[in-house]
Image (cartoon, rainbow, N blue to C red; front, side, top):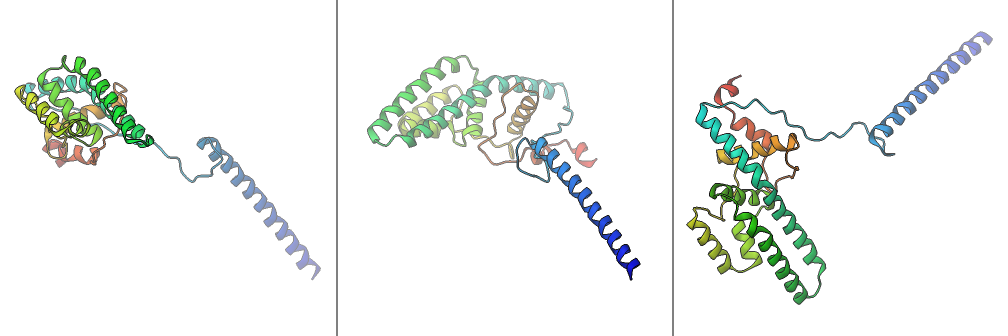
Length: 228
């Protein structure tokens, strides 16, 4: 009987020792998790940023390659203007919600409208027709609203119509939307942006529109790549 008690006691001590070791190991792992996360919240995984793996650019001929690089140059040139428009619109909407009196809202809106028009007019005059059309598409990408509707909302329907009529004289429609899921050139523009974001050539900004770039890349991939 005494031997059984000794054996039981020995096994209990062994079990207790193993439990303490496991607790120490768990505590050690927990501390490492806290250091990795940079806060006191215990997590089972580490959140990583979204990363795209880009395929090598392929072109069917020299002309298509040339068109792509021209499109890339123009897109990278005008994207900052589209981003600025989106930022200004966000600032305007956030500020207006904090202004209670209607007359103060109208006065503030007019001041912002004047500022935006003066800020953009000088720069937009430097753009070519194709650069202006790309800008219109990117404004829709950034805001989720066409340039026509933005002008209509900030001014009047007639002002928007006049802007669109004037733009049509230069073969530009400010009603143009951005559809990378159905328009190949729009997909190329999005592809150019994503590659520029990854290379830190442009400051990353998510689109206000709902589409999955990874899915689009597979959709618009060359037929020979899809077969592999």
